Image 1 (tube, rainbow, N blue to C red):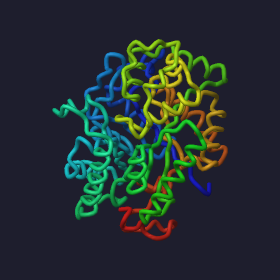
Image 2 (cartoon, rainbow, N blue to C red):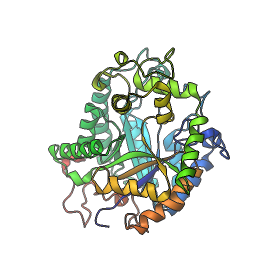
Image 3 (tube, rainbow, N blue to C red):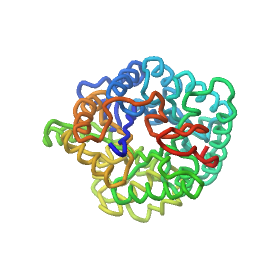
Image 4 (tube, one colour):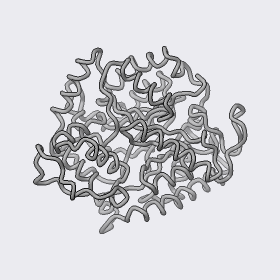
Length: 414
């Protein structure tokens, strides 16, 4: 392997699909227990994955009546996972909009030290009125303002880590992960992001996105190869194509319609009430992505699907399956491995943030069948060759170059 393939698993409650908690044989309440997370993390470590990834938003989930919510605070869960594992990386999502940078730097930095240098911080700007209300605000900050705060916030956190003189992690400081496909998000990613969690449906667009981020990093005095781009990838596996297709059909059938509609409405920024399932969304309701007020990343993905396919609302809801817009691959382990190999070798991705359809069964299938297939093709590691998250990702330790990677990260990238 001249260029390593990186794979994380996103432990997203019962699975990325909106109806995953209703899938036969699945405990819909398992995501409220710590064993759910530690079991998956230990299996991920046994498979030598780079990291586990926890999504989060600082808000009481408004759609909880239709689906279990993500209401366990990430660093709390990751601390328990750290105690139950030895090598697997630990990435948690923490908002720059509704946290204090000094407190966050200490909380995440301490966890990084105690875990032996395995932590990454996924920087997000939190969109949505529900989060704003949760913090006593009458409205959410506008998009550009959120990203201005995120840039300053992130630099404050990194500066706090750079100034630590005690409890210093073996990897120097936590890895900075960034997720944002808007123009503001791409600039922030180029400036400070070491791992970029992206959403893309099209291989050519994904390759252009990766090239843009790496070129942007160079403009900020950073080495392009020190940025790892990991698109989200939802997987639906079967031992045959027919079995995988039937599994996907079941997931579509058990998707709560009210959840899917509210989720899509939140992404588009307008209500879907009264719109029929058998007609496309009226074009006059859609604005250009840079004018969208919520998550521009997922707005772009959904709008691109509408522009390309002009689906009926019902078809669009099924295509997204309540999962938010990440690409879904349905097929046998060999077919999923084919897809991963294509995107990787074509330069569209450095790896993937894998989001199984159902947890834990979909992840079990991925580890038991896709990972061995990737190894047979010489694409994925058999053993860890480092103990830190930076080591797994091939990133340098700030202030200390990795022997095989050349010079230290420039000051602008720290």
